[in-house]
Image: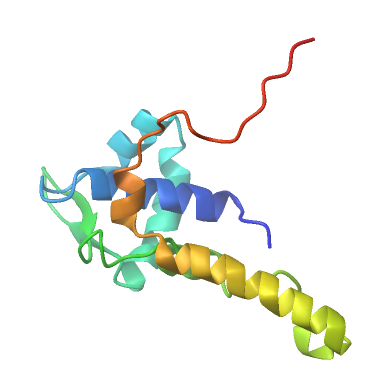
Amino acid sequence: MKISTKGRYGLTIMIELAKKHGEGPISLKSIAQTNGLSEHYLEQLIAPLRNAGLVKSIRGAYGGYILGDLPSKITSGDIIRVLEGPISPVEGIEDEEPAKRELWMRIRDAVKEVLDSTTLEDLSNYTDNGDSDSYMFYI
């Protein structure tokens, strides 16, 4: 499964709203500027998020968007499913031979577990403490 810009930018919108939760509505323009993204593209992504109840729109001069629920209640899986569809590493798992079907199902279940156990609260409070497993290459 490959997450497209729809899923990535949708998560960005939701994380920004989670960071500002309780401070009032946030405009897409400010989210776009903060993250160097196209406001027009974000406008296309916000509609399905609103239709799913993950965000609410506030009209008026000081309007914008707020989360539809607490950041601790919205998972990254909720967002990805709305914007990307069902979580599956391959199409037609049921048609695969048993050994491969088992592999694809285990991969699917592992991805679902990570997405469904990671809330917006987790993502908005994340700080990089330098413990990540990364490599430095010198040429």
